[in-house]
Amino acid sequence: MNQEQRSLLLNSSSRFLPPQGVKLSYGTSGFREDALLLSSTVYRVGILAALRSLKTQSVIGVMITASHNQVSDNGVKIADPSGGMLSQHWEPFADAIANAPSPQHLIQLIDEFVDKERIPFDGVKPAEILLGRDTRPSGEALLQAAREGVTSIVGAVAMDMGILTTPQLHWMVRARNKGMKASEQDYFEQLSSSFRCLMDLIPAEKGKSSGMNDKLIVDGANGVGGVKLKVLQKLLNVLDIEVRNSSDDEGVLNDGAGADYVQKEKVVPRAFGSKDSGIRCASFDGDADRLVYFSVPHESNSTIDLVDGDKMLSLFAIFIKEQLSFLNEKEDIKDCHQARLGIVQTAYANGASTDYLKHLGLEVNFTPTGVKYLHEKAAEFDIGIYFEANGHGAVLFSESFVGWLEAKANKLSSGSEAEKAVLRLLAVSKLINQAVGDALSGLLLVEVILQHTGWSIHRWSELYHDLPSRQLKVKVADRTAVITANAETVVVSPPGLQDAIDAETAKYPQGRCFVRPSGTEDVVRVYAETSTQEATDTLANSVAKLVDQFLG
Image 1 (cartoon, rainbow, N blue to C red):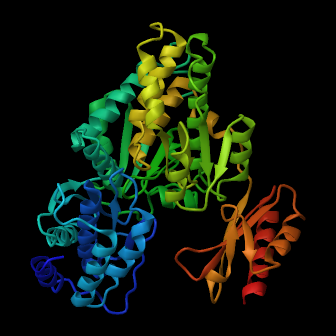
Image 2: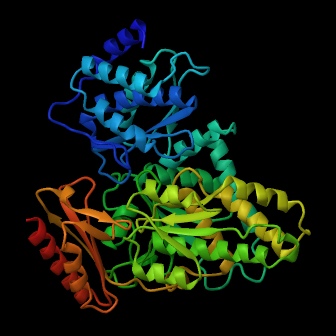
Image 3: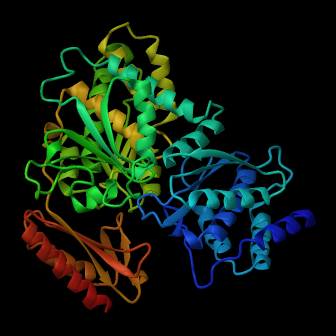
C-alpha cells in the first residue's frame, strides 16, 4: 500500500475504535453481536470487502443482518463473486482485522495481508461493493459504517441497494458478476416468470385436486420477507396468500414468530391460532433465507404439524427425480450422460428422512454441519439438493447441465413429456436462488409442486414420520478435546468415547446418537434418535453423562 492509502485508512479507522473486551469470530453467519458494539466491526468488513473485490476483480456484497436473532442484535457478512459465502481462506483475516486493538495494528495487518495475497491496487477494475440491510433499526447507521470502510480504500465504490432479504443481495452479486441485470425488480421478474412457466406446465389431470386448500398464510417474522412477498404476490396474481407478522405491522422482529421459533418450539407463531386449522401455513425467518411449513391443530394446546427442511428436500427430490425420469426414458436423448442427482444432508437430518430418500433410490451424501459445507458438496452434482431441518437450503444446477438442457429444449418434439420435463427443470434452475438458500423462491417452488402433484400439506407431511429426537448441550472445559470424523458422526478423540456411545446406542431400537463440539460455545452437543421419545431422552441423557465422564 502507498502512503496515500495508509493515511486514508488511518484517518477513517480512528473514528471506528473497537469495543473493549469483545472478541468476535467470523462464522457461517458472519459476525453477530449486540448492534451497539458492531460499528467498528462493520466498518472493517467494508475494508475487507473492498480488498476482496480488488483481489477477485469482481463485485462483492456486504449484507447487514442478524437473521433470526433478537432485534437488538445485528451482524454483517460478505457475499463472494459467486453470490456464495466468503471464501473460508479469508475467514482468519476477517477475525484478525475485526479484533485489531488499534488503527495502527489494523493497518499493519492489512499491509501484511495485501502483500501475502498480492492484492492489486492498480487493477483493471476499482473495488465495487453492493450494500444491503434488513429491517433492524440499527441497520442504517451500520450500513453507513460499512460504506466508510469501503471508501477508505482508494477508488472503491459502495452502492446502497436498500432494504433487502439476505438472498436478494446474494442473488444481485451473482447476477452482476455474470453480466446479467441485477436490480431488485430483475430478481422479482425472474422469480415470477419462472414460477408462471412451471404453473403453465402443470398437467391438467394432476393440478388443483380437491385435497389442496388454495389459501396460504405466511408468517413473515416481522421482518423483511413479508414485505417482499407482498410485492411478489402482486406480480404473480395467481396465489391466494395472506401475510401476517410483516415488518410493516406492529410486531417485534423474531419475537414469538419466524421460522427459527416455529421449527424449534413447534408452536404456532404470534397472530396464528385455531381459526387457521386446516389451512396451509408457512414461516420465514427475519432475513428470509429460511422457510418451514406447518399446519395448525384444531385443539389450541396441541403442537403444530411441522413440515421442516427435510420434508422440503424430499418434495423437491420427488419432483426433480420425476422430470429426470421423463428424460431418461426417451430414446432420442440417450446421448445425455445420466444426469447425476445428489442429496446432501448433515447428521442432524432426521434418520427417517434419510431412509425415505434412500428408499427412493437417491444418492444421499453427508457433510459436517454448516451451510458452507452443504452448498459446496451440492455443487458437485448436475443437480444437488441440500436442506437443513431449520429450512435453509437450495437446489443447485451445474452450468454444464443447464447448458445441456437449453440445447435439448429446441430439439425435442413440441408438447412431448421430455420437452415439458426439460422446460420444468430450466424453470426450476431460474426460480431457485443459485447463490444461497432463499425463502421466497423456496416457497414458490413448494407451491407449484403441491399444485403439480395435487397434494395437500397433510399428504406432504405423511411422506414419512420423523423418529423422535433430542438435542442436549454438555458444558465442558475444552470443546476442542473432542475431534470427530465421518461428517461429525464418529468421535476420534478422546479415545474410548465412541465405543462407549456405540454400546449405549445399541440398547435401543432404531437408535442413533452422535456428539460434536459446538462451533461457538464451550459445549459438546449431543444428538439422539430412537423409536420412542422416552427412549430417546434416556439415550441422550446417558450419552451426555459419558461426555461429562470423558471430558470432565
